[in-house]
Image (cartoon, rainbow, N blue to C red; front, side, top):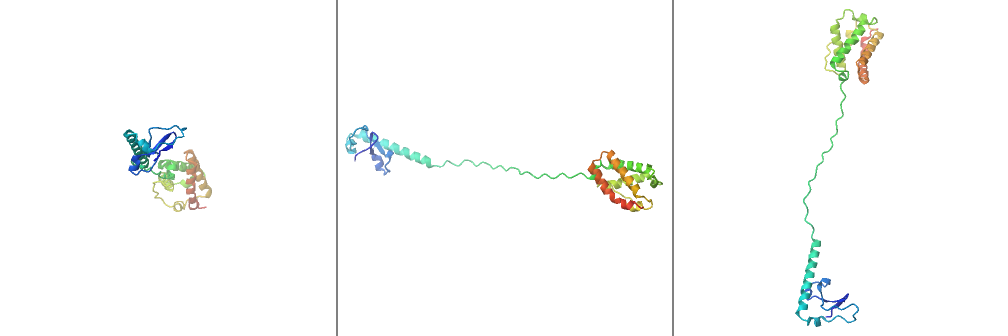
Length: 222
């Protein structure tokens, strides 16, 4: 068998590769001991002729071929081996945002300043109504202490407060007083002005007046 020329060197099939049925490749060839320059027209010598050179050539080529073959196996094997799976990272469960409850508006009696503020308010309104010549006649013979407490409890209950009103209905309590529409309107005017003087918010003042307005049909007699 004649060696093949690769570049300026003569390569011969490795006896190691042939013995173990390894597919011929560049790693399965042994470099012959006497390279020829590329310009040398002479063909590569026969392997049989070079083998006669003695055991040093055959032993060195066999070792070189074995080393190159083993290196090829290692490289191919390392390329095909998948890296071991790493440890699984724990999954973080992020807390879901909870919907915030909408703030509930304060009860009307609190926006008016509370129970005591309503008591002071009713006393001032009754003082002005009883002291005015246009409405004072309706208060003759009336126990102001009982009246003040009764009116305060009524306004507190109308404003969703914790008070308990134990008096008569508006119709029964005013049946014999003969209150006119103008007198009722004047009392409402006093109530509005006292709410402003107490610094009650506009929305709370309007809400209280809206709730008190239906009593007109029960209080006004003529």
